[in-house]
Length: 155
Image (tube, rainbow, N blue to C red; front, side, top):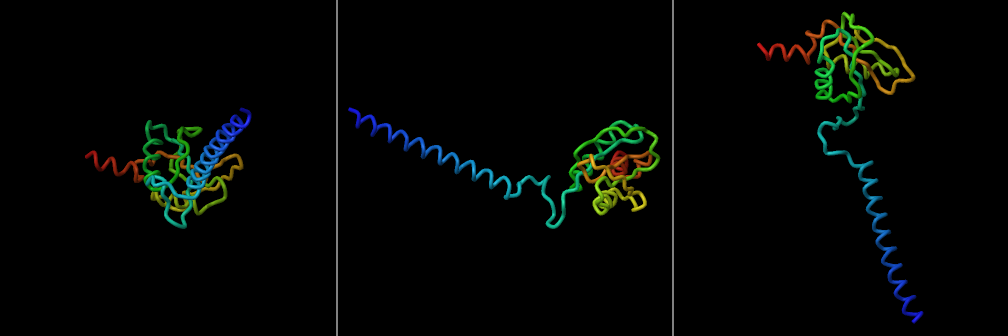
């Protein structure tokens, strides 16, 4: 009787080990696939050789809804907008792009997508920021592509 129990225990143990081994292989495959294979989601695709630029948007003129409109535009342009909100004040005359990590080229690309000259790119490095650039929307917002297009379409 003892041998039959041991034989049955071995079968159960072997089946359990096979199931656990298969589960480990499936999890390992999923981990490798998620880290090495790009997502088919078109909104996250990036041109080869082009880094993802992370941006925050701050409303510096106080007109409601501008930061959200800017978020949609910049995402369509391929930027990763990680945060939107109000600036510390609403008296920003001109829209500017601020380099936060010492990557002026990234800030210039954001500015170019908004039709802003390089003179509108400032550098204020912040070690506590984990994003490339800040866009501060100024009172000249109506001249920017995200808002100029909507005002033309509304007429």
